[in-house]
Image 1 (cartoon, helix red, strand yellow):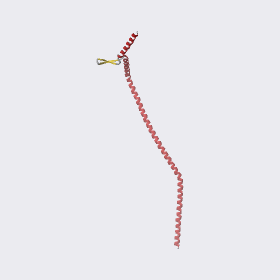
Image 2 (cartoon, helix red, strand yellow):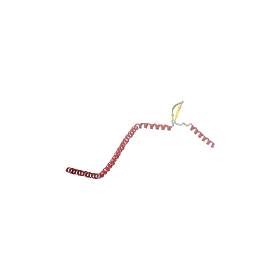
Image 3 (tube, helix red, strand yellow):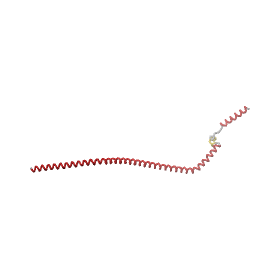
Image 4 (spheres, one colour):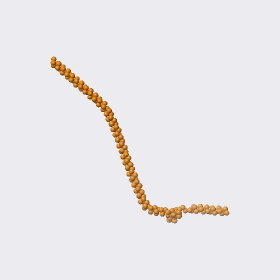
Length: 171
C-alpha cells in the first residue's frame, strides 16, 4: 500500500511538472509555417480587452465634450493669467508711485531742513541787528562829533587867520 501510494504521488508530481513545462504563456503568437496568423490569448485577457475596447469607445464619445471643456479651462486659466499680469503691472505701478512719493517726501524734508536753517540764520541776523545798529549809531555819533570838531577847528582857524589878517592890515 505504501508502495502504491508513493507511486501515485510521484506520478502526480511528475505530471504536474510536465504540465508546467509545456504550459503556454499568454499572449503568444500563432505561427504556422513561419507565418504569424494571429495571437493566442487567455479568456481573462480577452475579457480585459473587451472591457478596454468599451472604455475606449466611451472615451471617444466623451472626447467631443471633453474638448470643449479643455478649451474652457484653457480660456479660464488664460483669463486668470491675464488678470495676474494686470495685477502685477498695477503692483509695479503702485511701487513706482510709492517710490516717487517717498522721494518727494525726502525732498520736502530736505527743503524743510533748509528752511529751518535759513530761519535760524535770519533769527541770528535779527539778534545781531540790534548790536549792528547800536554800533552804527555810535560810529555816526563819532563822525558827527568829528565833523563838528573839524567845523569848529576850521572856524577857529578861519577866525584866527581873519584876526591876524586884520591885525596885519591894521598895522
